[in-house]
Length: 103
Image 1 (cartoon, helix red, strand yellow):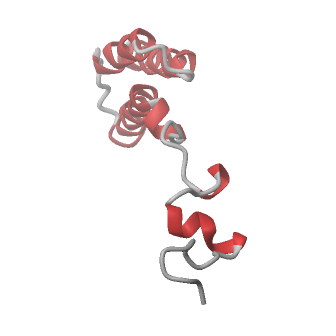
Image 2 (tube, rainbow, N blue to C red):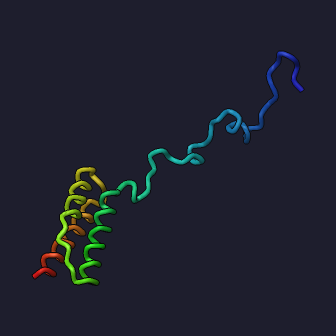
Image 3 (cartoon, rainbow, N blue to C red):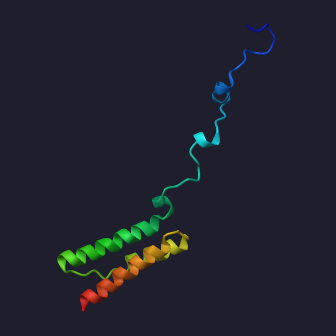
């Protein structure tokens, strides 16, 4: 026990960070860490919309000539998303499928 007015009780090193609110960096989630979808939101949506266009064309033989995947791919490039080239390929693929399916 400590004397009155003296230093407080000694804290074991293992618990010191808990009491002071300081945690090792590895124990806390990183504020900038985002998942693949959050980093490439428009690219992911572009691929999904293009896939839906192609699936509708294959199953119903009703071809959608939509400009939506192209606009989404452009938006993906504007946001400098990592998977923007994949979105562009998916959008062009949907357009080629629509043109080839309509003739």
